[in-house]
Length: 365
Image (cartoon, rainbow, N blue to C red; front, side, top):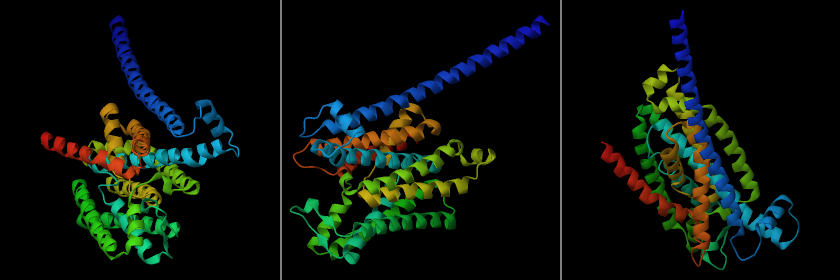
């Protein structure tokens, strides 16, 4: 009897130790995510303070909580806070979309940019500028060209991004290709739309060409508060769905056979995940232009710290994507004599990272 009691006691102690170890493991992950979110808040306040007006942090917080008709309040809300909210929403959307794509395709190179959605959206927007616009108004500098019917351009950019998604999913269904070849299909689709974009640029006159080139530069200044509400609602719905499916994505990370054995409908989960990620990406790109590599950079940084558990990497990719895009905005706005669009900054960072990932993947083989 004493021997059995000792055995039960030892088993209870082992179970208790395992449970405490898991709780410590989970607590460290959430503490890191909390610190990351706090860093994003502090970085946002710091970004608002940057600029010509000498506002204190207390004044910034007061204008955010209680806006009025003063010029300082207008600067905080309409000139700076809108950019920061745009960076947070766009970075979060592209970050979580890239994380999901990498999980369901089991490919570290998967992202909204590498799957061709950005070039498809750019082709749709250029088509709208060239053929459906009532006219293009160019300001004193080509870099500040504005489009007379932005809704038309936005809708066409979204539709062509979804068209690229539909073609990619159709190819997957017809050929039953592997997740690895989906990346190649995305690159092929990207090449096709890139060629079409070059053709439209060749056919455009000087005024339309300047507007097309300006639209391709991913910029946070293009979107209005109404557009930000649209992005926020779609991001919320997509994030809820992704977090609900987090266990399925974890199973798919272990392999299709294991996921199927655990009851996951791998094909349906992959198709729906790709579609929702594409919708999220298409909305952001159609409002802001091409912002590349955020969906590649954010998830990779988070996975280096937290591993591949989607309970943590999904929210972590959102926060890290927002931080990276906000840093790109700071660099582009305050590091040069003229403002550099964030799309150029993120591409300058993401291009070398893409090469590093390729080289590391080759060494592992």
